[in-house]
Length: 269
Image (tube, rainbow, N blue to C red; front, side):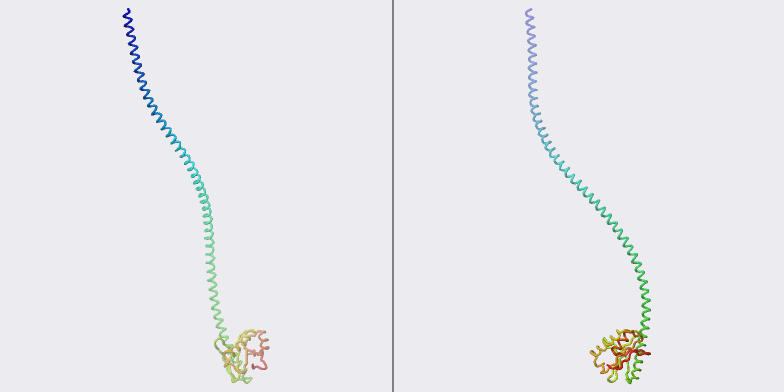
């Protein structure tokens, strides 16, 4: 019985020892695992430190990115402002361009009107040229008629004056005198008498002044053409009243074929 108890006790102790060995082995494994976990924890802490450092770096980069983003937004705002300004300027340019096109259209319209006006003016001008041409033709005819009439009047004047001078006892041949810068319708010399005169169909006192001026120039420039005694005469078919009055004052012989308007008592100058 005691043996049984001893065996049982031995068996129980052995079981206890086995369990203790198992516990010791498990504890060893736990310690080893704990060491491994410690190492793993160290690695995790190192990894965590790296992660935190990475996070810090990320946060710093994020901060920089935010600052850059703020700058970009500010720059973008400036760009949009510039775009808005450009659009406003573009709008103004378009409005200005529209005004320019309107002005160009007005100028073209005015140019069109001017061209039409120019065409009308040219037509009127051509009509005027045609009228002027007809007037020139008529004027040429009148000039030829006047020239012929003047020649006829001058011939008539020389003939009438010569005849009346012969009645007064003065025999002189009359002709015209043409000198540089000086022309006389009536000119003639006989011994010491010189006859000088002008002829006109219609004249006023101006013709008398011209005659006296020509006499003065003839004396100054061509004294050999002048004689001591001169008879100054004006042959005018239609003399003005002022011419008749001035001829009487100056003692100038004024006449036409059918009438002597004034014959001075002393005809010699």
